[in-house]
Amino acid sequence: MDNSLIPMMSLQSVSKCFYLKTSKIEILNNTSFNIYKGETIAVVGSSGIGKSTLLNLIGTLDKPDSGKIFFKKDDLSLYNDEKLAHFRNLKIGFVFQFHYLLKGFSALENVLMPGLIAHKNKKRVERSASNMLERVGLSSRLSHRVEDLSGGEQQRVALARALVMEPDILLADEPTGNLDQKNSKSVHALIDELNKELGMTVIVVTHNNELARIMKRNVTIMNGEILPV
Image (cartoon, rainbow, N blue to C red; front, top):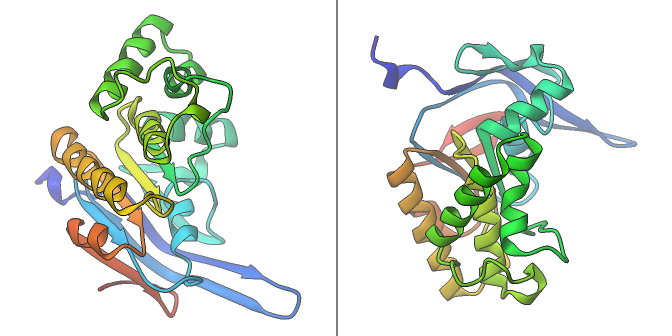
């Protein structure tokens, strides 16, 4: 069988809802969705339809109410919290609208963190972190504290941190939502380059039409289903 036809990740009959005091909000209803190695996907649509919830499910930050999520042949519902955390650190990179960098620490120290958490060899992780910061155009900013960097530079540090473990999947939630047009275009181009260079699957939640156009597949959430746009 052609391995390109085998999903890297698969949501199978997944449902997810939230309960408010007087109502129930249904995000997904018994829906299935396949994600393949190396593809790029934009999750688009109006606010409140569940785009970030979908990203959190794919990233195992949240669990479905029913159904299963597989990574290759592994049923992630069988993982305990510790094993899930280890899986996330090794296999998935996250970039958010707010970069969640550690203030008081340098760019290099921030990018080092995933490797140190995984108990990797410090010298090797530091070399990988330095290389990734160079790759995102910040070789001259390694020792700068993150609060001394511009918004665009901080988002590049966040991108380098997400990529330092060379994850199979990069998940980005409004990655350029707080950036000006110039920095947004730069990050868009970088995400596209890294997908092609590393063969990494990229899934972004975005309202940015330019970023969505770069992605090979656009989907949205409607009536509990994940649908092509």
